[in-house]
Length: 104
Image (cartoon, rainbow, N blue to C red; front, side):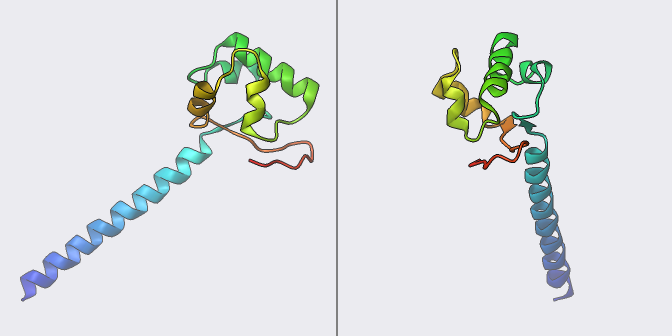
């Protein structure tokens, strides 16, 4: 009986550790995302799926139109399509910086 209790205790501890690590990984992944409203051309160009030209177009669009408020706005940029937009959602986030109402 002691053996079973010890085994259950260890299994519970392992389960709790796995859950904690999974939650920490999810938080870390979100923190690693690049804010498209503050990112430089150089930072954007390093995002998988983007290149220097697209990065320049994103910054140009942002400078002309103000903060990007929704991911779909990026479809207005030449060279951007839905497949690329979907891929970018893994690496970028939208957070308003100039008091805009962001629908992130």
